[in-house]
Structures are given as structure tokens and as C-alpha cells.
Length: 68
Image 1 (cartoon, rainbow, N blue to C red):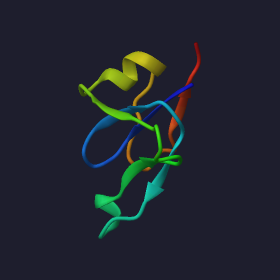
Image 2: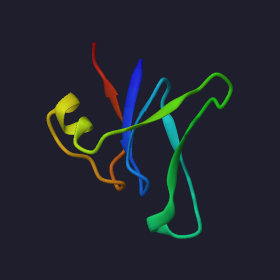
Image 3: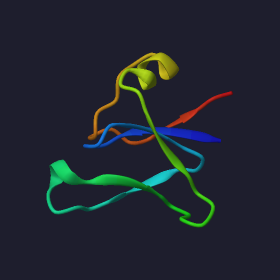
Image 4: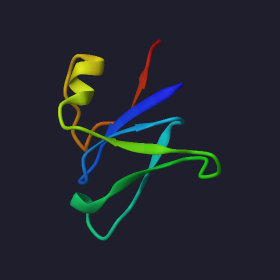
């Protein structure tokens, strides 16, 4: 399974579902994988998530699982 999410850094794709880690303020929260052992996240070029799922995400949205 692959998951996509957006945070203040940018657009991400993960190999497992991420959960939110609370940073120093709401605008600086970022996503981390739930299982940090063997979990990977890669920063995507801006606009990639919209091409993958057909809509834009913001940092307020929950991660979306990609169907394949």
C-alpha cells in the first residue's frame, strides 16, 4: 500500500500510513510513518498528488491511500 499526504514541507508519498506529529505550532506539523522501522517517505514534486488522486490535498487533510 502507498499513502500520500501534504504537510508544511510539501507533498509526500509513504510506504505505510503516516500519523501526525505535533510540531511547534499547527502550521509546522508534519507527517511521520506510524511504523518508523522500515517505513519510508519521499518528497514529491508539487502537483503530484493531484495527478495521482484527481484532487488537491492540504495539510489539514488526512493521508489518502492509493488504490492500485
